[in-house]
Amino acid sequence: MRWGITVPFAGVSLADHRPVYAGLAAAGYTDLWSSEVAGTDGFTPLALAAAWQPDLRLGTAVAPSFTRGPALLAMTAAALAEAAPGRFALGIGASSPVIVDDWNALSYVDPYGRTRDVLRFLRRALAGELVDGEFGSFAVRRFRLERPPPVPPPILLAALRPGMLRLAAAQADGVILNWLSAADVRQALRVTGRPDGFEVAARIFVCPTADAATAREIGRRLIAAYLTVPAYADFHRWLGRAEALDPLWRAWAAGDRRAAAASVPDEVVDALVLHGSPADCQEQIREYVREGVGTPVIALVPTPELAGGGPEVLGELLVALAPSTVED
Image 1 (tube, rainbow, N blue to C red):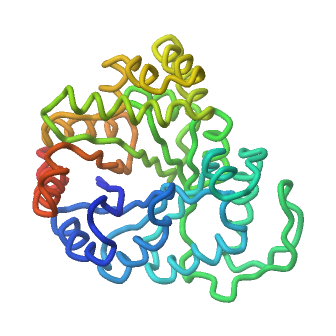
Image 2 (tube, rainbow, N blue to C red):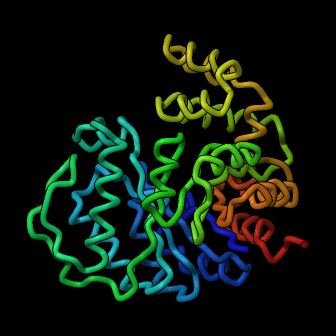
């Protein structure tokens, strides 16, 4: 069983992650996955891990398909695949209008088409082919990687609704799921059909504290920030949460952010943001595995204990959540 976690960690400088990565490997974590929003880029934390921990698998969850040109994305992925041969997985996704339009001065147009075309381009470029032609949403003229990776990385596609899920099953090596409950996994995977060798990764938000009220307060804020993004709102309508989340969407549209967060029901928070003791959280993560997730990826949510405890508390918590402490 794979057991991943999202890096880097808040409150720890990148230069100080070396002992943290070593501790994760010693505790039995198999994977480090990065995200790319407004903190570090998705590749630098993994490049450090590639040099410091030669046994850990590395992945992006996800690199946006819009914010780098196709050739630059291929070069970046190829460099990391060369640094960590056979243990890097490239996760790409459509991202969001805020990240693409508002923060990167680009146009968030046809996210499905762009992601499909980047996937097709990367498949050819990372294999060392000369790429020359139209891809629908862009064209590339006579590009070939000077350093194609000895082992081309598998490409996973972040997918929410049926169109992208079917694209992942047809053309990618796996899928990355996000912001769904363990019970939702079955509905998503029913669309993919689970081709042979198809990897299923899921980013799972984990708030390991016994203080349920605080965990729910944190979870409500996270849900209000994420599930008001149109793609995630449509995703949860498809999953059947329209009635439960309609007050959130109406309050958010009216500009009342506080009321929006407060409207999220406890049962929705509990389904999407795991909380409780580390042992409780482990068991909830294992439920995702039982539903078909092969690579669970913990996204650690700050807790009161972490805020006041420093690196030692973080290290103890990571060990407590590690697979080596999970009983079969």
